[in-house]
Length: 187
Length: 235
Image (cartoon, rainbow over all chains, first blue to last red):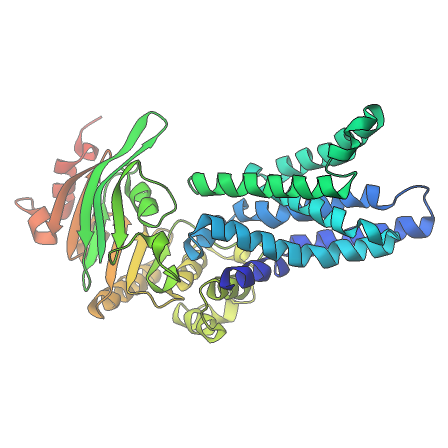
């Protein structure tokens, strides 16, 4: 519980997260008002994915915060669990607000889960820019392309059906927790 | 009490620690001395559970650091840099660390006052000078009022007043019964403060004992250090 409180504290006092969230919500509203055809979230989900990446990758940015984190909560699996719970609690209202502004409320769980996938990638890659590149390429290019060219794949893609979105989130978070557990705390 | 027993570690093929063993006792300042790259930081990182050894054990009061609940109340660590994200304020940083170990928020203000950062607590850690970063790192280490302090090159980047302050602080901590382990490559600095000395060179402990024992027949600790390590070899 202490670790979850600490992780929530970290997320809510990180300026880059709140800049990302505010911009994402503002652009979502703007696109909605402009009345673009198709899904607004399809575009502005990019901001939510950046949010997910930063939630974990910020540990490795300047200052060496990851060391402080591992000294404070040295049990790595407990740390990964606390981070996942904290991010879910913080991401859900942000994703929900974006979904409401986009007029796509039912997409909330799917988009929240995509933020957890992004967090998993951010925690494994540790470089925010590289992780953002991977996640945006996957969600904005690879997934739509596969869904269009190979319709049969749709039910297995992380961003088309929400049971698949759940499985992808669990898999990425588990992969990240495993990596976190076994590697030395570089930087 | 810190007990390091037969710790070995590899990085890739290279063996960076070779059966490192020593103890640091309560009420004493133990200086961990060695040339750059000798394995000081690696040893401290293994002790703190940040890195894994290939073999051997490193215990704090009888248990690995990572096995303690609320570890910040058992040992405080000052490593390179502040350990705070550059965009977070000093106070916000200390608050999340306090929360992680169930420490009260009042303790945050106490440690800020202790290291003289109260007036700058609302500034982002990235705006801090080197000296202020070290003080923020020390404040973080002291949050849990731990009986054991582990410090990696604590006076690096401090001005003369800061060095004097740190020296007095560590001396007082040991005199109050704490175990103080600090690494340094500065012999003069260490000779001023250490009760016990451990010298490491190329991953192996080459000498350990009280300051007098290690200095032995040499005129100064620096002479002993240069005689015992590769740093003394002409290049």
